[in-house]
Structures are given as structure tokens and as C-alpha cells.
Length: 311
Image (cartoon, rainbow, N blue to C red; front, side, top):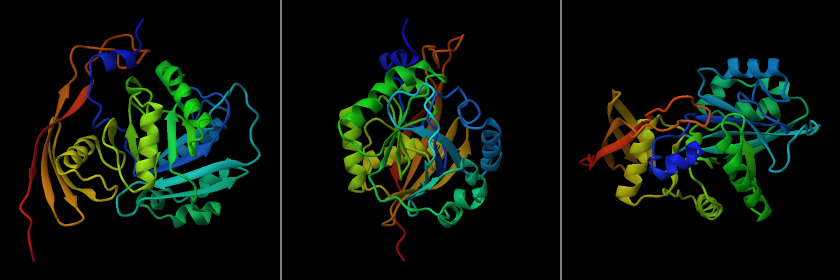
């Protein structure tokens, strides 16, 4: 039986505009098995998981669990856990890290401030600071959410780690398991689908140079999905790959049609028309789906550079 990822790949389903949305990511190390909703179905105290979900709701912060690549069945709980926070809006993208002996320390965070990109909210609560290592490569391996993430994600994470790539972690659900293996790269928050080890290495090398690789990119998590597709389309049309060169100025309209204005740090602007369509023919949206679906897709209809207003 074909997996949802194989079917999506065979049907050449577009992946632009499919990334999970979050202005800020908060990552907590939690080894051991993960259930379908990892914050409340793992070795993390489920009461703490529910409290963290409530604290983050509506703030723009998305919480995920991470673990080092390897075997995970009933691993002992570490005495010291790694914690990361990353803000993904251009012009204020940052990645900070800390350690904690008690994950309940995360409840001291000001989630509203963290969602707005105030790094002090992280540093003061957890005695954190700027992450000095390589960019983070987070590979979704949550097989209890969808088996494609385990079948395709875990070998990718293991291959990257064994080849000496720093910053590789397994992560809980990133969305879009039919695009597995899926990957999130921090600090900038660009997500990738159908990732292969050699391509991931190219992506990480580019990030270290302040550039973004568009091939295989699902979008930047800071934006909603129409804006993700629009920003990637402008990058391609303008040949602009500097990580923080572009920002989404506005998104007007409502499903199924939007006009997105994308701005460049040099003052240029583009109008991008995006339409939501249905992916045909019907296909499984996940391996556990009992019926076939036609998932929405973001189609860029037009990219038009606007006249630059000079002062």
C-alpha cells in the first residue's frame, strides 16, 4: 500500500505555501516515545503539556518537543534538558538557547512577549542567551502522528547526524506529513518538504551564509500560507535569496483569492495574486485517513513589481 507521501510525490503536489505558521518556536528536549499529540502524550507530564498549550494559545508561539536522533523506546528522562526559542520575523530573526532541570520552568515565560520577538522574555526566565552553534535542522519523526514521518524522517535525521551535521534534532509534528520527510530550519523558520540529506546540507550551508534555498521550500513560518507562497514566488522572480531581504507588507482578500504585497529592504515592492485551489485527483491527506481528500493548494497567479515611490 502506498503511503500518503509517496502518493503526493507521484502526483507532484506543490508544496509552496504549506508550512506551519508561527512567529516564534519554543523547543523543549523530551526523549522517549511521542504520541499523536506529543505535548500531552509523551513522557512529559501531560498536565504540564496542557498548561503550556494554554499559555501559548493566541500568542504566535508554537511549542514542539525535540530529541536527538537515535533509538527512543523508554529512554530515561535527562536531568538537564535543552531548550531553544527562535523568532522568525525578518529584521528580528534570532535563536537563543538555555538548559533546564525542570521543564515547568517554561511556565515562567511571558508568551505574549515571546511571540512579539522579545528575546528578553526567554533569557530572563530561563537564564538563556544567543545560540552560538550551527543552525537547527529539525526533522519531523513523529510516527504516531503519521507513519510517513517515522519511515522517512528518522532515516534522514540519522543520516544527517552520522555524517557530522551539527544542529540536527528530531521534532514533533510540523504539519504536512504527506510531504515527508519534512524539515524546519531555524532561526529564519523556513520549512522544507521531501527533504534529502544532500539538499539539507545545501540548505544549512546557505543559512550560514545568510541565504535561503527556494528548491523544496514550503515557506517561512512567520507568514500565513498565501503570504508564504507569495514570498517564495518573489524570491524566484527577483533572484533574491538573502534571508531577511524580503518581508510581507500586507495580505488583502480572503479565501480563495488574496493580493499579497511583498517588500524589499531596498524599497522595491511586488503585488502577488494568490488563489487557493484543490489538489486533484483525490488522495490520502494522511496515512491514517479513512477517506480521500483534495487538500488546498496555494497557486501564485501573477507577480507584478510595483513602481518604486521615491522621496
